[in-house]
Amino acid sequence: MVRGYHIIFSAYGFWLPNDPRGSWSDFVGAWDLFLAGGKVTKTDVRHSVAHTPHDREKRLATKEALSRPPVIFNGVQARAIGRGFADYVAKSELWVWACSIMPEHVHMVIGPSRLSVEQIVIQLKGAATKRLLQEKVHPFNGEAKYWTRGEWKVFLFNDDDIHRAIRYVDNNPVKDGKRPQTWSFVTSPISRDATRSAPQAPRSAVPRG
Image 1 (cartoon, rainbow, N blue to C red):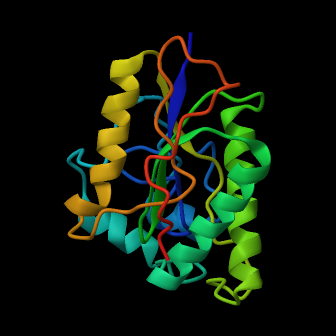
Image 2: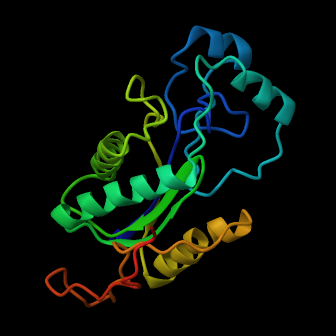
């Protein structure tokens, strides 16, 4: 039985559909991108391939074929994205056990939901976009999409899986030389026998920003 998910979704230009390390995309949507980097490099593995040996020069050269500059979130944009996530969590009662909003992608550990993981990610992206527009810090001023299609997900089946994923996500900013992140919508993971009718207290009630 699946008890949670580790999900990753990225900003435009971060992980291309023909990345030599593999991708979760089904096709290369731009002809120029196909010419520069070749066909889609579909992978179904559930572990990170970020450190897989590959042709780094080719990967960077392929990015030059993008129609817009790759999106890199600044601190103000990351804060707005977090506020968007908080808006969605408050109305959906989604369990979020860890979250790191990186400059080019988002890591999150979530609990089970009546929605599919794919639907949840779509909702989270939409809530973040709404906030970015409200605060007038949208990367493309609302004129183009800044999230890539789809997401990468790992199924979590037990407490060990959940806590391992939480540690990974919490440590992600630190590994990148940044400060740990604290978000008000992140709560403690439920125990094996807990029910959704008795939510746990937040891991920290102090919102970032």
